[in-house]
Image (cartoon, rainbow, N blue to C red; front, side):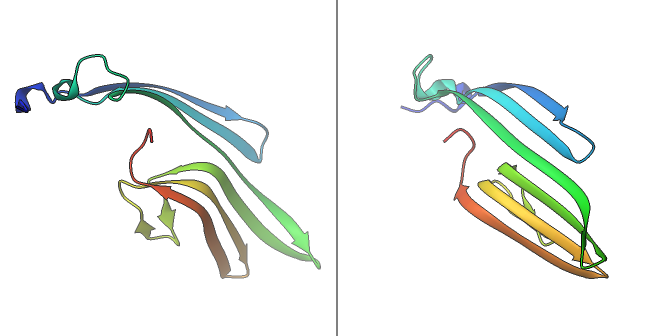
Length: 120
């Protein structure tokens, strides 16, 4: 029988934010998670260790003499916001996004694979 008093779950995480240069940044997290004692105490199914990594960058490039601002992100997309508004809450993506801005026009796209829980 399931006991709701034993659902206590815990997690711990280490975070690294490493600027590669003025234009690129590497971000890495390492999480350890225990998903609740009602499923057992120290079983492999409820204890997870997983990384979340991404590389992001931004720069301005000249195309035919015109300045174009370019931003991109590649890796684990946590709480990803698409097109300045639609946030994929409680869903994480592995993939990337590219945004280019020129004279008020914005091209923004994302690509990847969705999974519904961290650690899967």
